[in-house]
Image 1: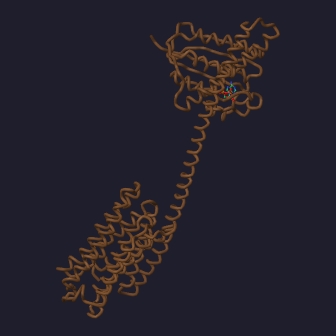
Image 2 (image 1 turned 60 degrees about the vertical axis):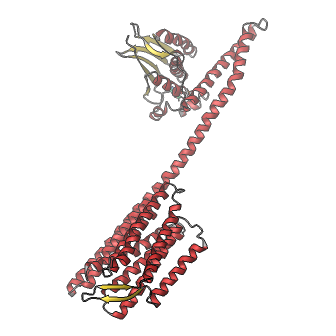
Image 3 (image 1 turned 180 degrees about the vertical axis):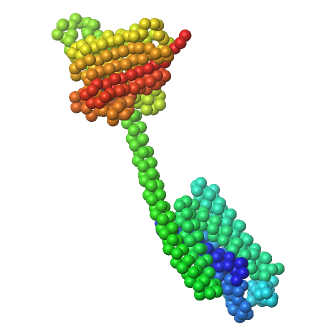
Length: 536
Ligand code: ADP
């Protein structure tokens, strides 16, 4: 057997298996287009087989039979290709004329090929078994026209869907058209045009492999892993078939036994290989679908988070207006604008005033947090100045709070030279007082030490307390929005978990750093801030 014929048999196998694999790999309901693709591949495979029989046969009667079948199968292949192109990617109604016309033409092709000599008239066989075809002058054009027209019509139908297609479908259509033009037309060329001058050869069925492979690739493209399985399975099968052929071609019994042994060995490992590829793909598919689900969940969470930020901002704005009135009127009542007030009235008014102020600060925190979420940030008014006196001011204020709680408050200023930094008065003081307030709040007895120092380029600020301390896990979460450690939630339910979140943002916006340390629960905490010094 010469090489051409072996390739022809291989082409038959590949045609069949590609069609078959695409059909069975389609997990969802099998689409009409896929079924047509399979039927086309099957027709091409049989066409290759009958071409093989025709080429190796030397009996005149059989030759005529084989050739008729070859022409019929050629017609069937183009017929199914047309339906595939018309129904890809999903079932759409094909008009009756589009159904009827190709069917009528195909019936004519079957009739002419089998029952008449309208398409081909004779076979001339030379000594070396080269077979020349003698075509009917009109029937030849009828057959050629049928093939070309039906393929072109299919291509045009598919092209119409190109504009409305998404990116992936556009790619698929592109591969299908390239495959159809290259494979389909060269198949027609080798079997009908070439044969006017040369004998019928194996090249037609081999050329149509391009068609089948391109379309298989396009179909499997939306699921790239399928290609891997198909390729593995196909290669394995090809190796099996090749060894099987070797078994039959073996000259001696020993050779045959060796080939059979080899076949068993290769079949065994081939199955193992296919199974491992399948397993890997299943795992990958699972991961893929999990990633997808996670993506959805994430998106949903983000939406909810956005809604919460929106709500936070809205609610805070609404709360602010009545608070401003309460604060304004309380202050006016306190200063006697509505008549003289007694000493008994003064105390509750003071409480109302401070509570309103606390609430105002709280609302400010919420508003600022929602501004950060919406990427708007703080409104800064930066100046370059010496901040020590300002810091000293809040420290003095807060030290009174500490003493009232019975906590020892220590303040150490180690800076003796003038130091300047670039800062925004309001927010920097907010960040620093938050650290000191927390130290006082989360220390039941013991001490709070505030230190200001300077290195070459930085102004350092630290707050150490001997309070409830923090675990390693707490330290990791400390600057996250709304974080409050479990240990404070029961004894200090009033916090918001926004203070440190805002403080970190503020310090970062000042070009500085903020961090915390603690040796563990009950072992006190230390907070540090460094800010770049401006050298003038
Ligand atoms: P709040 O104090 O309103 O809860 P913060 O953002 O200021 O919000 O602090 C967040 C959390 O960090 C606190 O709830 C607490 O768990 C922890 N924390 C902050 N400062 C200290 C500290 N000095 N000692 C122990 N825990 C602290």
